[in-house]
Image (cartoon, rainbow, N blue to C red):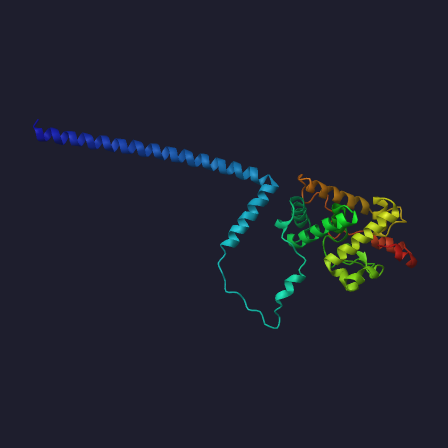
Length: 283
């Protein structure tokens, strides 16, 4: 074999070896990447299943996803409001607070109540904040204040019962109209903070006059002289128990022991029995 033939043969062998090497490396990379993707998929599924079973993790992911989407939302041309309708200081009337600015126990309570009663967290945060301040000032446990509010109105500031109990705390406005004078008159019953402050004062008076929590709650309901309160006291105390657990950082399902929709207190039944002169004892 000539020298040229030997060179050509060596070149061919080299090319063949390179092709085999490249093929082997490619097959190895494909196998590794396939196994890595499979492993990544399994890890993703496991994380998703774990997060899906933990409400607090799921909520955090949802909030982060919403923030991400809002941050990347396309900027639109702002709408123009009729100048006669504009009122730049209107925000001062809003009963709302940022839940992120509350201490952790209060923020947890606000978020839980928001989900449980399907109301916005900002106004609930303001009410939680007020309940804590009032509770310390008037020696009434904040969780009791919020529990009464929840059972009475489900955080509807415009609620009204058949006998005229109004607002968040379902205070009998015509009975306690003198207490609303400090807020400008009876229509302040529909201002959430004013109604809350009057309601807490009435609640404290009822507990003090009755000499105990349960009898005070029955008197607040207007059923102080009745043997059956329709389960009102148990509902309030059960709600307070849930709120205490939330404050302690313990998990509580948002639908735990939730009463039927539109289920309010039994003050209508109490009023049907109470004589007109007994109205002074109602809330």
